[in-house]
Amino acid sequence: MASVYAEKILRINLREKSIKTEAPRRDWLALYLGGRGLGIRYVYEEVPPGANALGPENKVVIATGPLTGTIAPLSGRFAVVSKSPKTGTINDNYVGGSFGPELKYAGYDAVIIEDVAEKPVYIYISDGNVEIRDASHLWGMKVREAMEELRKENGNVKTMVIGPAGEKLSLISSVHVDEYFVAARGGIGAVFGSKKLKGIVVRAEERKIELPNPGRFRETISRLMKESVLTEANIWAKTDGTPIIVDLSNNVGALPHLNFREGYYEYAKFINTDVVKQKFHSRFACHSCPLACKRKINTRRGVIKAPEYETIGMMGSNLALKDMDDLAYAAEVADNLGLDTISLGNLLAFILELKERGIISKEEIGFDVDWGDADGIVKLIEMIGYRRGFGDLVADGVMRAAERIGRGSERYAMHIKGSEIPAYDPRGSWGMALAYATSDRGACHLRAWTIASEAFGNMPPHTYEGKAKLTKDLQDLNSVKWSLIICDFWALGFQEIADLLSAAMDKEFTVPQVQEIGERIWNLAKMFNLREGFTRKHDYPPDRFFDEPHTKGPTAGIKLDREGYEKALDEYYELRGWDREGRPKRETLERLGLSKDLKI
Image 1 (tube, rainbow, N blue to C red):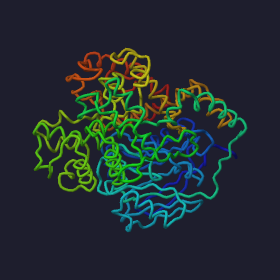
Image 2 (tube, rainbow, N blue to C red):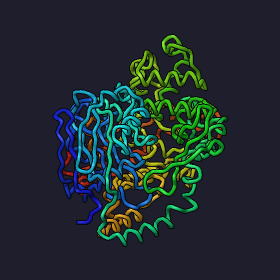
Image 3 (cartoon, rainbow, N blue to C red):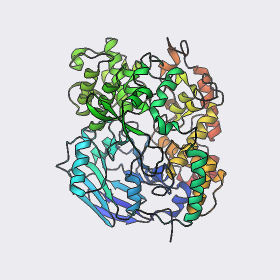
């Protein structure tokens, strides 16, 4: 029967070397769709409370969505879901390229990876053939080298690997897909490394999905492409990609500088979208994407992938780098080692501030390094990726680095729930403070990108008024969007999502139904975090944002209002149907069909 689903889940136990297929639960598909929702559901159900995220009890769920592999634009993504070893929260990442569609074409909606292998392995998936293969010869390889070797061994496959940082269980390590796409946050690379899983390759012989009503789906896609994808408002993703945000953020005082001491960088013009355009070499796209937002640039060291906004902000302006070639090279070194450039940039700025303040010395680090020192920064990156010397002390992220260093360094550790703050200073966009703090995986700009409506839009940025509802609505919207799965560059609303689902499944979805799915997924993630011990006290930004105003740029003199934040958090909890400590009320869980799952 024609379906948006492959109707199979692949379950692989690395210790037992067992490979099984099972049918997805139909009720879960109806309640959670796929992607984020389905992945969180499996992790919630199968990873026991309090499990060691680097132990055999943790699982990795790689999930596609109902639109994955279809002709829907910007649908070439998949989810990687697990318990985070860095934060202890639920952790989900969304990755582009072609791996997700290839997995769906190969016949699987999701892959569940269990336990720990005895020695390094990789997983080979093809039509009806799944193997656990020896990866001892790949262990120790950097990302690019490992991918190349896997393609030599297996032909035209889609690849997913970790680098040395993941092998060495760095909690800021990432998983890399199809060369230039990354599941970056939450230490997911360390989860792979703890399982001795170097990577996964997948190949499908036939690339098609049989929809119930393909004509209806084509008509809906054609209409939505004209209305909301290839539009003047969305064309920036094609012409510039995320580097266009550098100047936008700098002009509103939200571009991080010197470990978030400031939100304005006077040398931003040397690392902005204009520089990327001047150095342009080529562009590339994910599966089924008409925007092709990714770019490669010409540099002194050859052709390198252009860094995205988050990398520019965290490893550029935040570290006072002012040369795009140096920045792109530092990011490439980090990528090849398998490090998350958001967490890494935050951590590096923390180290540089501690040295500047005399809390740590150049002797402790092993050499002298300062703001804007490109060579020294690259040296630090390599030490962290390989856990060498001082790098071993700090390789698990800024929260643990501060705990190990002590001496009052905790004040300068810019994180929430152990996850490093991304590249938007909330003093330039107060909604981002609430968005970061209530994010279910620790500080995350993607859960609710409120700055688009504030500093980049029409909402006043330096007030909490309206931000609680904005944050909740965006979190629910993205929860369902990432279950389809659709890229963030398609600014879908609930109505467009309802239209897409109705056409793809050939049955009607209403806006309230779609909203409820998003709300259900968000509350399920909250329940996971509650059972792991997270409470209201974890839903706060660092003190720096409340205590220290910016001293320059458009937000000079501005800091967050603590009393106003408390009221906004209360309002957010109330809108969510939670109590004042952030626990979902019984009636909320009953309304969402989650009451029987309450394990907190």
